[in-house]
Image (cartoon, rainbow, N blue to C red; front, side):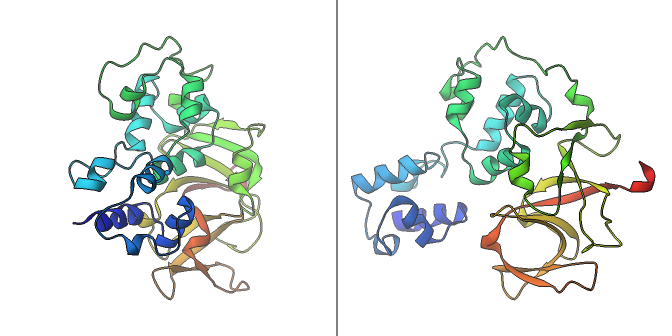
Length: 280
């Protein structure tokens, strides 16, 4: 495999087109396709600066692994270091949303400055690779709540009608811990608004949702779909006209199906349960 082929492999891993990759780096259109033997030192440094998880040795020689680190492993190390068992405990500690943590995992990137701010004594080499001695942390705490017993948080001011991600990012949001045996952990409880999924999901009900990777969706089932502009919908997902599109279908036949480009979608949530109005 050539340097060019390895770079294309990395670009595909990042779910980027070559054009988007080139734009992100400030390279000319078609740069990747025009690589012959190797990459110039200035261009290589730019790539490493923008994508620090890319293993330079692997890119140039094929030796070692493609990535210098995996953010999922880093998150697991942080949780173990802090005596946390659930992702939501870590997001609470860092002051970020569960959506942000999901994006970190998906993009294999994270906010190093935030980690350093929260854990100033953390050793970068241990954090990225797990090698060396785990630093001593005297701040290990799960806080005032015993988060190991809760299923997730209910956000009473957030509905599935629009703006889910933007609202969850708001640190001022009121949230209530919810514990339901058998429902799992790291759930987000939000309100249903509107009648597009009536009678399966009714306005005023509460649904429990959880981030999933798009590759794990089952076509024909309902999901919460969050668009990059913040719009949020509950819809059945079915296959679109090609691999780059999906169909969003309502339960209420009054609403027409919509074919959507995957480029417009930021994240997808599976629906783990519903709390109906008559049960409250």
